[in-house]
Length: 121
Image 1 (cartoon, helix red, strand yellow):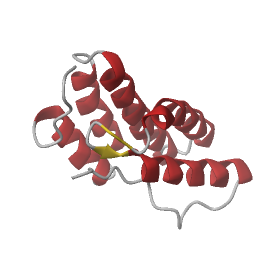
Image 2: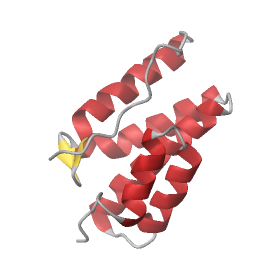
Image 3: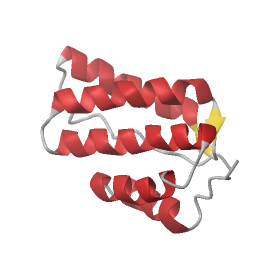
Image 4: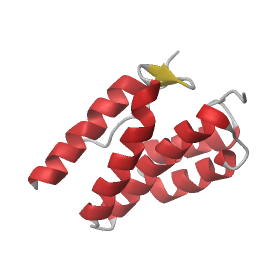
């Protein structure tokens, strides 16, 4: 099992990009790390990559792609609640569910913040 270290390298850079709304760049940084992982860490990071990709689609006005990727990410994240790989999973899943509800109801999303990836310290 390879520990997920969010303080350096591709994970840290991807997190910085995600928090800055640079979702495509976050996806690219995390994917480079994902290729080296195995087991539950690989599946977990794949979920975070899907979240980043979802919001890249959202920025490009592809709401169907956003919803599809968020649903896939949620399926991978939910088994890991409440915390996995140094990330607080429960609040992330709750925020993803809020986005899915808004997308499915065709509600305005402008007031909804992007889900936060919070490190569990």
